[in-house]
Length: 227
Ligand code: NI
Ligand code: MN
Image 1: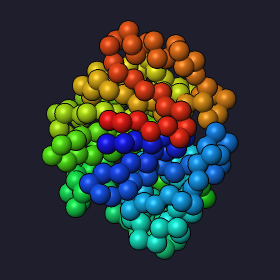
Image 2 (image 1 turned 90 degrees about the vertical axis):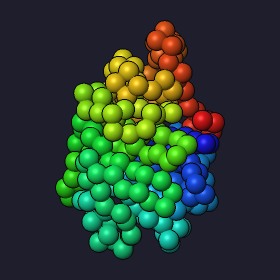
Image 3 (image 1 turned 90 degrees about the horizontal axis):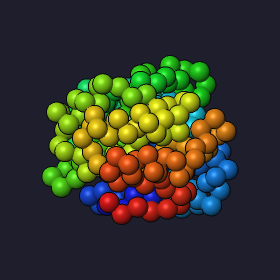
Image 4 (image 1 turned 180 degrees about the vertical axis):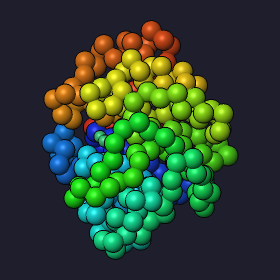
């Protein structure tokens, strides 16, 4: 699978012939000014929670992709539903078999409010799998023991996307512990450098993962990682 980093916590990937974008936050992100948002073609938009830095470009991308379907929690799907967008609502602990594979919406320790102040439900993450691949998109979260449930409930993870920027989410030290909790040895970092409080020292973070023998990628905006 090819995973393209579009800045902050936004990723694009193709899976089973469908195109997905996660937590689109491109136009407000000065680090992502090279990303041509209006040429993004997607079938699904995954939204972990309601914060602006995860939903800012949902409506713009949906306008460019009239058949797109959102996947998120019930409250976020309802809020975008009032704006005319189609979606599949989920809630924590639930999984659903889509025609491309299975998605489970899992716990995150964070907060969630939509841009107009509406209640955004509880924040979450996603585990996605099919018969060949399994991966975890943590969303914004602290380290939580609930992560230990993932290897018990889902197929063994091939890779995971974890926040490493600290301040608003866990930092890299906890992400290293999270890799152990989820029994995953291939980690992609996100939610770093976008804002001053989450600027990180790349070399320090990379060497901390290397010391634990965890394969770790800290992607550049626009970089594609082969997984
Ligand atoms: Ni957030
Ligand atoms: Mn965030």
